[in-house]
Image 1 (tube, helix red, strand yellow):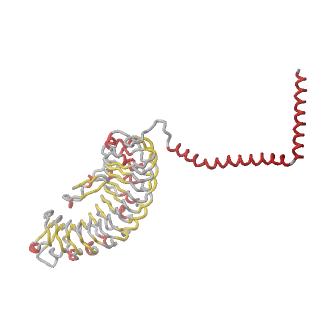
Image 2 (cartoon, one colour; image 1 turned 30 degrees about the horizontal axis):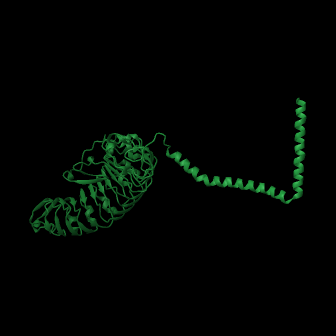
Length: 446
């Protein structure tokens, strides 16, 4: 009875059902608490397998009696108004999926919570969880999807996420307060299709070994292990597009490291990820040029490198991205002519290249000229202009020195009559000697 627009509290007839193996009341308008669900105290009735109550208006706490339902494997209470903490005992259930996103839950995740070796899908996004993640997750080995985004988690990203979770396909830690460097252990997550670390306070550079993430390459073959959610639906939002994917996570392959404090160059090795659909590195402090082989990322649908400190020319190979529908290179230090051809001809919005002073060509109004001097020459002119005041003072010093010496001598001669007479006598004698020497040499020559 999902998506049936049923309102009010849970119906009392649920207590009359002898066995409920799969209960799906999602996408309705049920209100009140979850107390009307058949509890373990009602020995005649059994809730077995799957309980889906997503996107309703339930309030209150997560009922503790759920902890005794050892027959429960999938629990989806996401998209409600549930408050309080997750009961610790709930982590001990043999759940394969725990979906509690988009509520108002609080508290942290203790080390005891990571002891469930059966859990494959953990979704706690869009809540008010806080604190640091446990640094020991040895038993948390079966995870395929881990979504902790849009919370208040802090501290570093634990190394065990990459070390111990060998089948991890989607890791979403966006919009938290994580700090420190991106752990190198994530490079071991060879099945990773979705990596979203955006909107945190991460520092350091992008690990070069990210280019070895096989799950983001076209040569990778992935057999979907998430049979529980074969009829489910998730939404992955990329810049400029919203993609729905069902049954298999291979349809959306995305890397989002935006809005952090990352530095260094964008590794050329990232261009090996030729199955990547979305790449967002915006709002960081990346320097250097755009990787020359960017055109090898032939599956790119969305590319956002805006608000960095990238320089140099846009590689011509970017025109080879035939599926590119969203591009943002604004607010950088890029220069030269904008490449043309193929899919780029459809991207005609000038804001794509805004705030790059030395870029020219369509779709910008600034034309490119064949003899236009590069930015380095302009920089030299700026340096020369900056030195103009120093040159001015140099010439003023020379002029002042000359004036001081000239008028010093003239002033003395005007005031000292005896010195003036001797100077004139010296000049007269010198002129006589010069005249005599010239006359004698002239006669000898004749």
